[in-house]
Length: 442
Image (cartoon, rainbow, N blue to C red; front, top):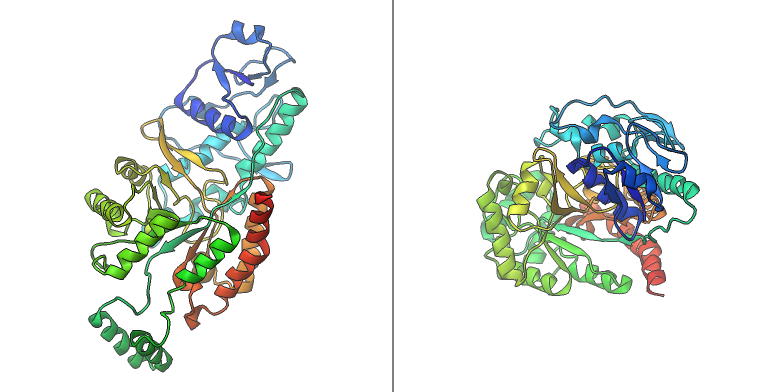
């Protein structure tokens, strides 16, 4: 196992060493501040300090970030290493401070600094270093770790590394389970009126047939999804929006409707059930707890997973509230405006509270693809989206990471407005997901 020497151990350094140790090794990287002990040790040694001792060690000259306190604008100048961007250039056996650079991206340091927000009050992706330097579409930290592993292997040929495995975790956001059903007569009357006013006679007919039980609701693709999950031997995550009151951004089926409660209960028994905290709960911690408690009663299980509705979160308030509410895993780390790697990584990692300067127990699962981004934000066709989806899948698979896409039932249903998206999903499941699941089962 690797022994790391540094003059001073800080919370930041311990956090990133724990992350890198988990990614590269089966055990922990040991940190020591004892120079004599480090020099006398027979273990492979990594010297992370400002002074090189000998050519026997792996030397990485430290940069200041991990030894600072407080949040300050950083001088970040990118350059290329092995055809990938890097920053915090330094000297030694590796060309940049991978510890500090990885911490900067994982902690979302830039999101604590003053920044412009998008129309929904969220951190805008155009502010990010990854977008400005054109590596948003890459799991850059995972690429860095591959290079770092090779450098360590060259220095210490006998060093044993962890054998990682690629995983695909399908996830679904259920913002509105049905288009027409179980919405009450007032909402349906309003729907009829709006469709007639716009001359959308096909929608008027469709709504009428669904309400009379003559046609399946266009958003109801749940049995169809179940068949695909069974075929691919997967247990996905379903995140249900359960706002108590309707609002501009929270338009789920009423929590009083028995079919909605039955649907949630079924998925709680069958797959992984998670909360999709409402827009309103982002401003009300008590409301967040109410939504979680309701889901726990209906699903008859403790709710430990969540993903923010509209990917609405801000550092550090949102994640602190999730922790206080008992959430252990959050799947919100990504953008609701563009596909890509918000934290430049495709491995789960623990959230670091930069203002408190402490690692937390909240495990973040970053996503890199959302169907709604491709459709509404990037204005792509199903074919263009399929090509993008496969690119992300192969990049994550190439570094043996965790691929997490977000799907919505209304896009995968039978509504004519989303024609072609259902077939695109089928192709992805049949030609890609199934075969990898099959090979993993062998």
